[in-house]
Image (cartoon, rainbow, N blue to C red; front, side):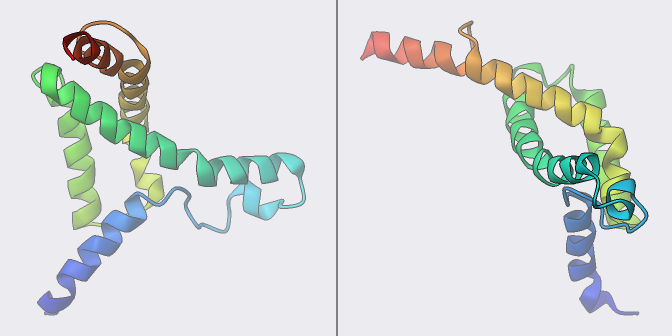
Length: 132
């Protein structure tokens, strides 16, 4: 009955899905905030996902150029998880099924950035230096 608020709700669902840490109060790091291990995990949980998301997006873009056929299944899982978050409820907890895929894409981005084999960034830069 409130179709005008639907776009904002979908944006909230996506935002909540990609929030680095879930704000649930019953997590051990919130129940025992005085412990050093809980503080360490809280800092890691708030900071590590951001570079993983950025590297995963880069890795996905780079991999789709060359290996789009082999990546149909992981991309379908990503899209289905996004669709589920849009349709039902977006929460960082519901990102758990795709986090291994995100880590693999992030590793692919790091490989693309650091290796010197054909089609990687360093190889392309070296090739351009030779021409120019």
